[in-house]
Image (cartoon, rainbow, N blue to C red; front, side, top):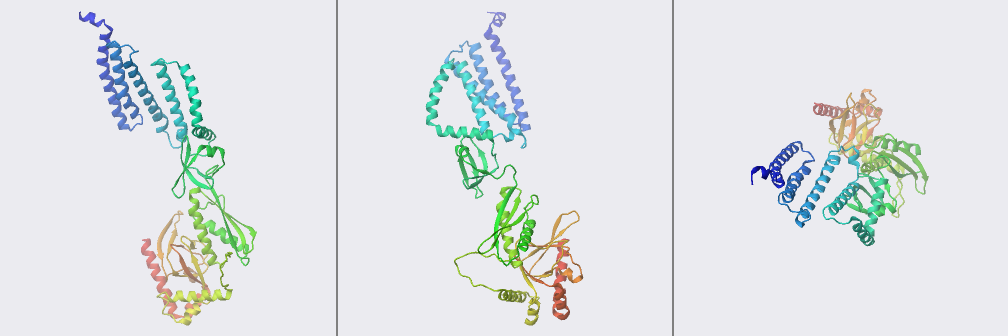
Length: 481
């Protein structure tokens, strides 16, 4: 048989074509894979499947059928054709996922598609692909097969009715979209953040970092609250009780100031305070404020309730509470005497004041006030009026300066024995710095006019004040540099 006659044979042409095209195709795919690696492309895995499986299987099928003459109806050929179709389905799903979802921006619609919908789409594509394989490769009658599957599906559906109920409930929730990933939900008094939505259930992470799994059927049939819809802004209400001896307008003003100066509370909508009830032991007040999102609420609520206690101590408010325990009532005179003695003891504990006589300390404490500040509360605000001369008895305070561009800078720290608000002695009525409690802070506040008189009459006190103020100026100048 000559070469020309051999070339006329179909199997020879196929053999030659495969021997030339197969290495060329493999080399081309190898170059494409290397380029995708450099680009870190999400299509890399799909192209790898084509090079490692689809092209070799296609080459083997063509070789066996076109060159070796094996009929497509042979079992070996059917198995090979089934294998290549399965790999094609897998590669197609990988490519679709890479093109549509992996490269999507966080704000795009692709990123917001629930995983449940993606899984259902994959399942449908797999079922369509299997139907093509069964019909084209194995020659099965899809009509009869669908009938048999219908009966089988009925039996299977009865056996898996709970799971199927969760599936269809998940589909209903998917289209209704009452919540999404990262939303905060309240389900039967269980609060958690949505971390994933599957075909069967919704996974919540509680503030205690525990995982709660709620079946979709429970969500579809019951009711729940979404703290992240229609807006992420979350409102919180705190109910407080103060004595009938405390004027309501005074209490309302103090609570409003607490809400307005607590970090994290929004100014729009503004916080509000209302008188709600006259109870047996106290007047009831409701403080309502808003935070940017629910996740911030526990921290900010704790800060607000802590500041309420410190403010009530500073302003002499009483928060009565009904209890079965017996407490000895303390009248105003006795309370004032105890505070007076506490100021004297505090002054004696300071090295710079311990040298003063007992009579001098009693005189200093006569008209002074004892104030308590919690962590991050401000005793003085830059640009606002100064109420008195402050002396730190216990704790530490941060000295903060607001620059012309409205940025703030911590320039120093005050400790027990330090003074602030002394600008009143120089006739300056507003503060040039902000003084903020770095920890629990106890200060004694002196009346400025009386304190000036003390300085004039008590030489030792004048020396102590000058020394304290000079040490503070040196410290702040050093730290600001």
